[in-house]
Length: 259
Image (cartoon, rainbow, N blue to C red; front, side, top):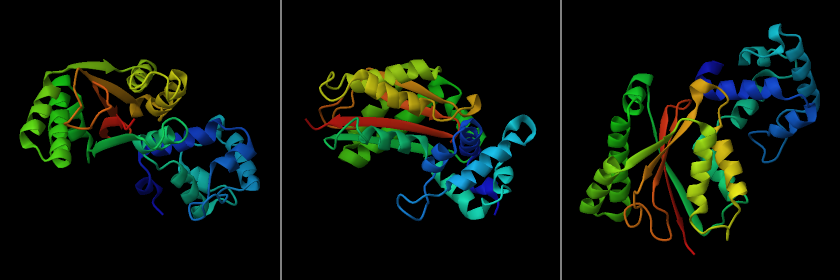
């Protein structure tokens, strides 16, 4: 099995980071589920103990690639696939799932629209400047709006509005997490959740990958009115867009509260 083809480099680095930082065999075992059995154990405690022991015997006391992990007695291809499955979920999908797991209820409609680029060159061409990113996001917004409301004029105007909005850029994930949490919090103050609760999830989202080269960055298009072009009321002004370097992806977020 060619492990490099099975997992994005950023996802492999995240998996290796997990294996290199965890020190408890039970916690390791509990974190990895069998990909075929709902709730079943993917890595047993004995194998988890072997992984931790093998790590201490490596140069630098850390795994550098998945082949070193696969070589640990008792691991093999099946358990490697269970490990990979646990870390294969894209960041946006994980964030949305976590938000519905105890933060927001079913009367919230939180959606994301992700564009994935096949190569670094085309990705960098879009994200390297605010103007090229705004142009790209405007085109995507126009397409999303047209598909949802079938109003070509409104969709075109929405796309143009994105390019006129001020792009508040958060290269630091900590400040970006605060800004994104505040965007959610302003929907309905704390009638639904505390600011601290949603901040916990936005922090996890924008710090999804541990390496700087894989970082996630928030762009907030200030003053963009989502109403009637992307979502229905109750919604919030401003348009959150997340650049995910690890997945070579641009994600547009929308949300409406059916109160």
